[in-house]
Amino acid sequence: MGKDKIRKFAENKTFNNVIQPTREEVMSNFLYKGNWKEKFFKNDNPIIVELGCGKGEYTVGLAKYFPNKNFLGIDIKGARFWRGAKTATEQNISNVGFLRVQIELIEYVFSIGEVDEIWITFPDPQIKYKRTKHRLVNPIFLDKYKKIMKEEGTIHLKTDSEFLHGYANGLINGMGYKVLSSHHDIYGAPEYELPSYVREIKTFYEKMFLNEGKPITYLNFKLKA
Image 1 (cartoon, helix red, strand yellow):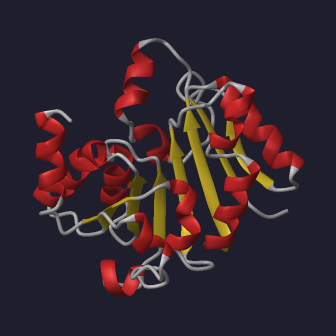
Image 2 (cartoon, rainbow, N blue to C red):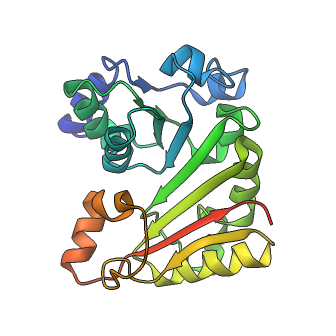
């Protein structure tokens, strides 16, 4: 492990907005499950989760945009979300946190109906068929999300992958769920009516893809008919 990663892992341990449980701790009556508002955020505001949050730009950006909501970035790579945790700490953004855990354990992290919204921003599209089970919008993951989300909760997917966008659209419709908004190029077609933060908040990868001329897609859906 490089010195920079070691430094970031060490600094993560000093941040009050970072939780890094072991797999065993998560799967054995996890302390925060069902108690995120009371024990971590210490308020009764809605909880919005970003899965595979990377450097945490979107988690922090949304937290700034919505000070009366709670935001939790989840990623297994702590050296990546170190940046977001440090920014939130330095800027005293109190409605944001980061959790280092595998996304497949999401049901052990939250209670039924505890999450209001989920954001998935620029995940690996896992294009090969044998990698389908690793896509963050496959049927197994959607079933997990449905259990932890409120009935009216929504999921947002931003990606540069036309493949993943099309796959997700087909899957959502095929499973009988409701697509609220679907766009193939949110910056190339400004006539699309979207909430301003969908365009204004950009991740590191999003900026890189835009510089390469790639269209950015957006999908918003509910896990109910």
